Amino acid sequence: MSEVDVEGSCLCGDVRYRARGTVRGFYHCHCSRCRKATGTGHATNLMLQAAELEWLDGAEAVKSYRLPEAKRFRNNFCARCGGPLPRDIEPLGVIVIPAGSLDSDLALRPEARIFLDSRADWSCGDDPIPGYPGYQDTDRE
Ligand SMILES: [Zn+2]
Ligand SMILES: [Zn+2]
Image 1: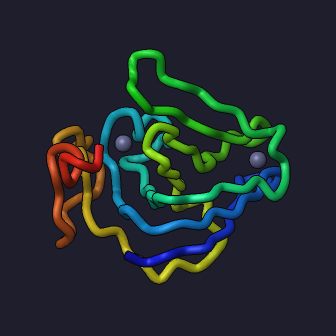
Image 2 (image 1 turned 180 degrees about the vertical axis):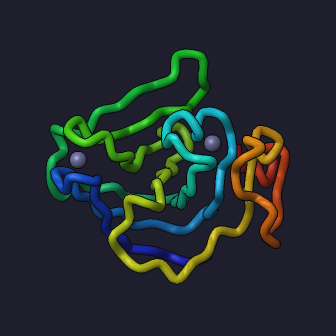
């Protein structure tokens, strides 16, 4: 398991963060919630466990939308520019980082596509990394 220590920011730069932890997964997620939250074919999320998330700047600008019917799905974003930001999944001690918000270089590459059964016909998804109909492992919900 690799450890990462990364920094990132939103589109306008008001919000900056630092995240540290053990890599739990790096996925392209094709679920409909990620599509709506990002406006793109899939979200690319880096998931860290035993993780620490620190707002370096603009903590007051971080807004959160919790989907009422979802067990855990939440979307964090900048109040000014709407850019997606990391969120913690509290009961799991996991942090989900929208990879596009990262400013640090990352040596890792996405390991899988998940929720491929929800993939939009127009989205990418025919590359050689594996795809799963839901989560990659049942213990990784
Ligand atoms: Zn912003
Ligand atoms: Zn998703």
